[in-house]
Image (cartoon, rainbow, N blue to C red; front, side, top):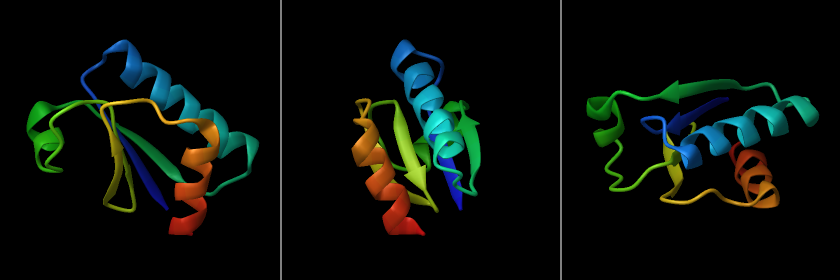
Length: 79
């Protein structure tokens, strides 16, 4: 599983990255978590606001920090 956090470094981006990494660790989920911070790469996903959350190359969220249970649900759906 591949999870990407799209963001240039704003506080919401940092919060989302920490949440995702913590959830993956706590729930023993086998996933590679990447931070994508280059604007050109972020724009490839077609989002207009950061942070963005991409699971297995599918954009599941952008512009806000989702709740933990919602993030877990998306991860489980992608497994």
